[in-house]
Image (cartoon, rainbow, N blue to C red):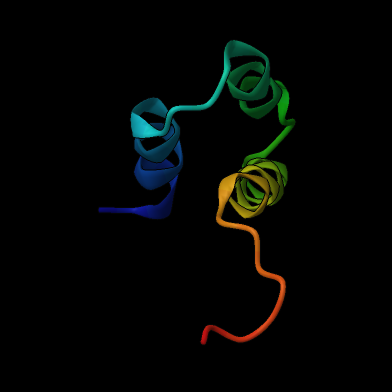
Length: 53
């Protein structure tokens, strides 16, 4: 799967709210879309407050 197809498919299967999906659509190019997607994934991941015990 090439990168551009992955950048279209991955957000479709992620449970992002409509406003966040719109931010991906509003990205001007693939580089910006990667940055937005990375940010969304980072924000939606588990909270990390230290090393696992």
